[in-house]
Image 1 (cartoon, rainbow, N blue to C red):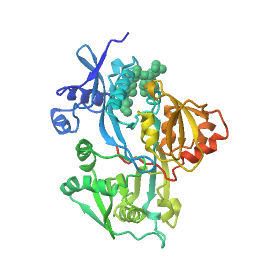
Image 2: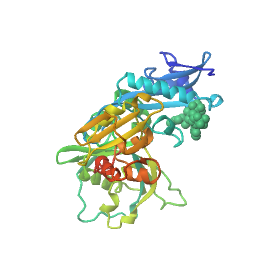
Image 3: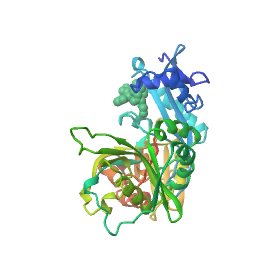
Length: 402
Ligand SMILES: CC(C)(COP(=O)(O)OP(=O)(O)OC[C@H]1O[C@@H](n2cnc3c(N)ncnc32)[C@H](O)[C@@H]1OP(=O)(O)O)[C@@H](O)C(=O)NCCC(=O)NCCS
């Protein structure tokens, strides 16, 4: 028996949700001023609340976006955020009820995916989410980092004033972000959040190449120099960096590594194939110091999701998918380069929604998931075929915090 109910939040209830969220994430309690600044980026729209009587005890929100999938289509998706349950009501199924309601809501909105960043890796698998994009943390030692003679020279870099950054960044992202697989659209509500949390706290530099502005970076210095240790320079921490190609990427890294009084540049959540070490005479000047899961993906409408992406040139395979949360997705799908259809044929591979998400954008190969016991192989010859079908030839990347 449940002692709570789930319903959409109505206007006027956002602050209570904001407080539940802040408390669950151990943030300081918001003052009236904090809330005033935050309110516009925290609308009631698309938020669900769990109520024990009149009291809000849990919440989950989302905003509408589009997700780039292999082949270049960008089907509608829900970017899920603001998930929290009050500490005195956890482990009683509140999140489970919120997730179920939210996934149904996405289906009603005809959103093909739900996408989120997880505070802990043990929370969302049970709801059908799987890690679909990952990132690495780079640490580049400025004193040892020399660019090879054959590395792209890069163009011009200019710093934006804060007002300019607020005005220009949404358009720059739109134009520069290449919509590589795993990236999302950034609607106005995301920018309202980002302006305060990201843009106001970082320097913003734009790279201009032969064809115009083609990259930008947000970074902030972490000062470590003291009077006693004048040689300990600051670390520049990259908040985000987007570039249309290696020329602009190199130009931005050349710029970061040219800033004075800096000992190192630290860049979390970079694409797994970001090639900074290859540009340097001493590749070890660029260390990979972390590997993180980034976007957790949930295929909400499995037939639409499978039909939205392209496939490699290979024979068809039949996947049997089981979805305990949205059972209408359960079934057998024949995947081929020509398209996807629901069938009754004997399955070649059997898998859950989490594993489907892990291979969908190309982050993991079916072979690896089978070898680790996560995919059941019913016809062994089908496994290399599935590898070829799902291979994308590129590394997916999310690149947006939400
Ligand atoms: C994560 C959180 C929302 C879970 O809420 P909850 O209401 O306790 O979750 P539920 O009771 O519905 O849990 C469902 C299942 O998931 C498990 N689970 C939930 N949170 C878990 C966690 N953090 N680690 C491991 N297992 C977890 C529960 O044990 C339960 O398992 P069971 O079905 O086998 O009993 C809540 O703990 C919270 O607010 N945490 C702090 C804020 C946070 O991390 N939010 C997520 C931001 S991405």
